Image (cartoon, rainbow, N blue to C red):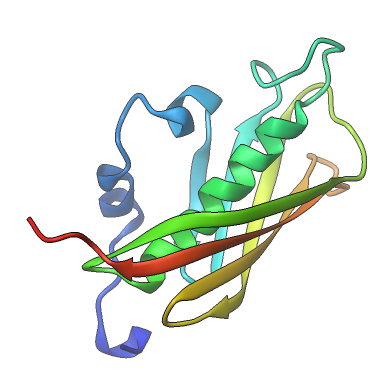
Length: 143
């Protein structure tokens, strides 16, 4: 179904379907923009660091997987589900404070697979991480 013939949820409606208290909340991820083709969210470095006080690479992956999975979910909205099947990330530089921003851009939005590229940048706009996530999309289980 094309986006023009269906209604996507508002950002508030989308956030209502993400379980509270989950990893998104614990990581401090805040959504700025959400559509199947492009998603943007921020995340604080503080609280998401490794032992040397730098942004944990796993935190960048959490941000990337969150954005890509929600993009795939929006692609099959309503009545579908998205299940992550692959994520890879290259870490280019570190951050020790402030907010990072993840921007996910759809590579492919198909009937069974969706892939997004996610670029994580620091407050100066420097690329910290480039990730790619692929999701299997299928109808949500009945009942």
